Amino acid sequence: MYSSKISGLGRYVPDNIVTNDDLSKMMDTNDAWIQERTGIKERRWVQEGSDDTTASMGVKAAKIAIERASIDKEDIDFIVFATLSPDYYFPGPGVMVQKALGLKTVGALDVRNQCSGFVYALSVADNYIKTGMYKNILVIGSELHSHGLDKTTRGRGVSVIFGDGAGAAVLSRAEATSKGILSTHLHSEGEFAEELIVKAPGMGTRWVTDILEEDDPNDESYFPYMNGQFVFKNALVRFSEVIMEGLQTNQLAVGDIDILIPHQANLRISQFIQKKFELGDDQVFNNIQKYGNTTAASIPIALTEAWEAGKIKEGDLVVLAAFGSGFTWGSVIIRW
Ligand SMILES: CC(C)(COP(=O)(O)OP(=O)(O)OC[C@H]1O[C@@H](n2cnc3c(N)ncnc32)[C@H](O)[C@@H]1OP(=O)(O)O)[C@@H](O)C(=O)NCCC(=O)NCCS
Image (cartoon, rainbow, N blue to C red):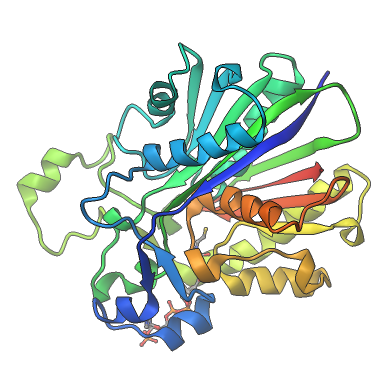
């Protein structure tokens, strides 16, 4: 068995900043409500007419990650792409990254695990590396939410939360050491699939032709639906559980955490966990204030920013944790 380590990180967010005050011009909301409930001050939304797509933003983040890994792009031998907002219904964006980077015919896998997408993607890549199947895997999380949100008062409970952006990591083979990804932990609970969902178009239920035929202006089925308080309560429990599971697997304790990078779902969720685990402000990294919830992109953007800011040093214990639609949740324990 080999070890796997993150050898390069990159991020990309669109230039266009949308503040809470900007949103209050589109719908009945206000800065105080959004900040108090979520901590979000602003988010990035791809400007109309921009070339940015989920795949192309992923490529931009990936190029930075590859450069920082000090490898040639030809050294990438597999791609894992996590998103809930692919450019096309199919194929997924993994193959578009393969094409854009000119990576001959390397395999590309798409992961559909929403806010846990990057954690799931990293887990897949980690195991491919550890078993010796691949040497350098490009792992991307990218989302273009803004085109699919209900930007009227009807959608305000969801739309104010989500932002666009991309993050990427190169995961590389290392000789077996006590460093790198120590373990990953994945869970799901499909019983609650409908609590955070975009129902249409669904291949087996209601396809695009049905929607067009019905042409119902009150149809909300192609916008995200979220049972906010139920999601919130489940997130608090699952985040805590899966962080503890990861630590205990490695005979570690909460006090060993140097930095926790939680999926940026809601600042109040991060603060709850910080308080529960008695972590200091410098032990929990948050950037939801600037970007909102960028789903599969949130952890790689936050991890990259934390690393760029010098908050992650060699030997640090870095914990990633996510929860989201599915429900799905997971954690990654890394010795940097
Ligand atoms: C979405 C969330 C911020 C909403 O906060 P909340 O305290 O649960 O608020 P509620 O949905 O109960 O709504 C409270 C009131 O605010 C209103 N409201 C909802 N969105 C609003 C907005 N953007 N601006 C102003 N008012 C809003 C509601 O209509 C409701 O009004 P009412 O009391 O008159 O009916 C919160 O539930 C949450 O963060 N949930 C988890 C989200 C999450 O983590 N999602 C991603 C998982 S990966």
